[in-house]
Length: 225
Image 1 (cartoon, rainbow, N blue to C red):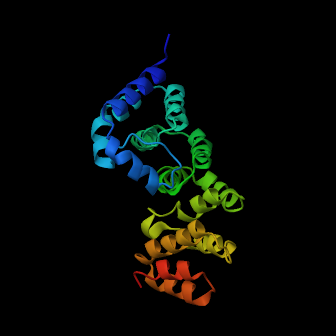
Image 2: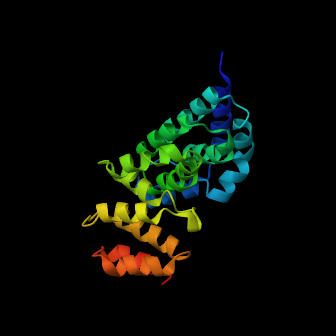
């Protein structure tokens, strides 16, 4: 007998298969460097046809919800992962501390900017704000990791914190990546600085001009200065 999360996942796949847009599959795969399969649903179309699935996922108990997310993540197509992330966003108010490590595992799996950036800023970032005792430890672990995507997560998880960004922490993380040749790291540091410059222009300006940062970091970080 199928469990609730399996039934919901099967419904999701049926919907995606029924709404496949074959003409868009190849361009979408090419845009993502051929790393994932696609049903060919662009974001507005996908959200429209899967909204009921996202709403239904909120009714699952915690165990079944995580199982549903894992089924989505294990699918070879990318659209189920997007549905999983949207489902997590809708469930934020029910998430306990266990979702911190759960989210980190998702970040480490099938990693690319499209999932990592959403999970980092929309899910992980909110969990860190909700559980400050974990915020005091977990991001430090991520920035020290050898996994580039975990480092990127530590750099950008405060993107939506506005004027409440812990700038001392952000500066420490950026300086710890100094000398990196990795595009996704240097892009992230510039992005984080650019976003915070909306709220503390002078502090960002001083930091950028007082340190030898990558050209990409400087270019991105100074866009609003």
